[in-house]
Each structure stands twice: as C-alpha cells, then as structure tokens.
Length: 393
Image (tube, rainbow, N blue to C red; front, side, top):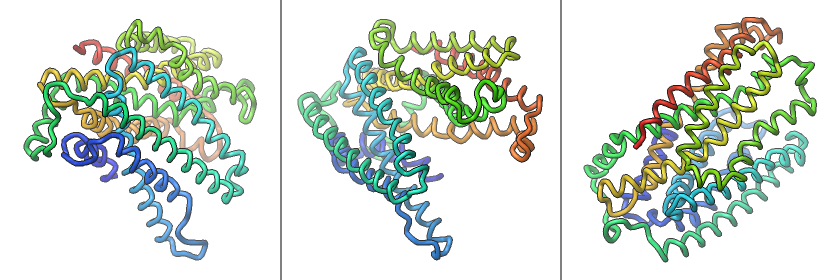
C-alpha cells in the first residue's frame, strides 16, 4: 500500500525533473514496456507447488504486485505525458482519445477469450500460454510506441520558453514545484472532481452485479440469461462507442461543456427515484448512469493536458511538467478505489447485507438501501462535482 501510494509521484518526478534518461518518453516505452510485460507474467507462474509453505505463496504475491505496480505506474505516467506532448491542440487530443478508446474497446475482449480457452481456469496451463501470448503482443506494441514517439518528439520537443533544462532539480525546487501545482485552484478543482468521478466509477464497476441482483427481479434479469448479458454488454460497451463516434461533437463543444452536460443529465436522471418502484425504470437509470460515468472518464485526460500547458505558460517554465501532473493526479485519485467500496459496503451492511450473503434472502430494507445508493448518493456526488468544476478558469 505504501509503495502504491508513492510510486506515481516518484516516477513523475524522475521523468520530468530528475535530469536522467527517464525524461525520454520513447525510452520508457522501449525499455520498461517489456519489463512491464514480464512483471505481468510473474503473477501467473507460481514459485512453489502444493507442498510449499504458505509464506512462499505470500512472498510471490507481494513481489509480483510490487514489480507490476511499479512498472505499470512508470509506463502509465509516461503515457499521460506523451498524450499531452504529442497533441498540441484540442482537435488532435480528441482524435487521440478516440483511438485510445478504440484500443480499450478491442482489449476488453481479452477477458472473454481467456475465460473460454482456459475453460474458466480449469486448464491453467492454457491460461498461462495465453498470458505469454498477450505479453509478446504487448511488448511489440510498446516497442512500436517507443519508436513512433521518438520520431515525433525528436522533430518537435516540448519547449515553451527556452532550451530544456538538463540538470536535475534540487530538493527545494521539487518541493516548490509541488506546492505550485497543488496550490493551483484549477488543479484542485480538476483533481477533486476526478476523485469523485473515480469513486462513482469504482462503485459502479464493483457493485453493478450486486445492484441488479438486489433491485431487479429474477424474472426480468435472471442469472445466466442472455438478457442480463446484453444489459452488461450495453452498460460497458456503449459509453466507449459514444466517445468513438462523437469525435466531432467533442471537438465542436469541448471537453468542459460535455462533462458539464453529463453532470446535468446525471442530476436530472437521479429524480427517477420517485419511480424507483418500477424495475424497468431502474434498468433504464443504470444504463444512463453507466453512460455518464464511463464516457466521461477519458475526457479528464484532456483536462489535465490543457492544465499542464496553462501551468507552464503561467509560471514561465522551461518545459511542461506533464509526468508530474499526471502522477499527482494518480496519487490523489487512487484512494477512491478503496474508499468507494468501503462506503457502499458500510451502508449495505447496516441494512442486512451480511445476512443476505448467508441465506440469499432479499429484505425490503436492503433493496431500499441499494436504490438509495444508486440514485440519491449518485445525486449528491454529481451536484458536488458540478459546482466544483463550474468555477474552473
């Protein structure tokens, strides 16, 4: 947990103000990409066997998570910085965002394929072979990304005021840079809104199945039916498809207006609470909620990229602090992945969720609590986010 908290800002500073070869985005992808793929493989190849003591398995888990999270954070920060530096206007950023969502849309099928070829992990050897294949493909993609970014940035390096600084910053200057970024009102508004949004997204992803089980009768969405499969397919694929096919709309109106419009739609949709006695209204609301949550997530990358450039101009920096901005953003929003489930489980346990887990009997109190979490808690999150982002400069 400690390493997960500090690795993002650590790699952010090394890539932007460290004065080392890590300032080269292309080298990050070319050198650390294959290591990231190997760290991914380390998760799926046990160190011991059935007769090994328990500490061997525990040590394997800790080391594998440590390595994977380290290189994932390093490459992720570099990706955010490359997104900012290789797209110098709003139109190009939206186009890059579209292709990014298209890649994600293609990659989500990996889970389905892995489940099928391994027969739900019954054939673990086949699953391991499939993971090796994925790692090889990923390594090739990282290599191509490194070469393309090297060609692009060698022609036009990210400089705003003067030649780029080659000497590392002092500890005092690093502290000063951090205070300037964290003290910016715009950065605070963007990151706070992103934190609230991450809470919503995490809660939606982790509790969608539980929510449908508690508030939607089995006669409408029964487990294992094509209806519930279609419902989850629409909820997960439609948001990304909307981002992909609405490139011109985002370019014309801008990320800010789209996000604010999404907040307004979410706030209005929460008034369906008065009709929450109907399961069909709840299904309709959950689809709208999925669209507003997951289609809005990529737009925060545009916000952070624009803030990075504005910050460099306002403070007369020699170059943008792309890696540091994305790293600090990750540092602040990562706790949302833990806080949101804890909050939701707290409310559910107070309404008898633990009893439901034992005897699988839904009480009216538990169903009512889930509906309030879906609609009312959603309403308050959206109102806070709307007014927080409304005053951004």
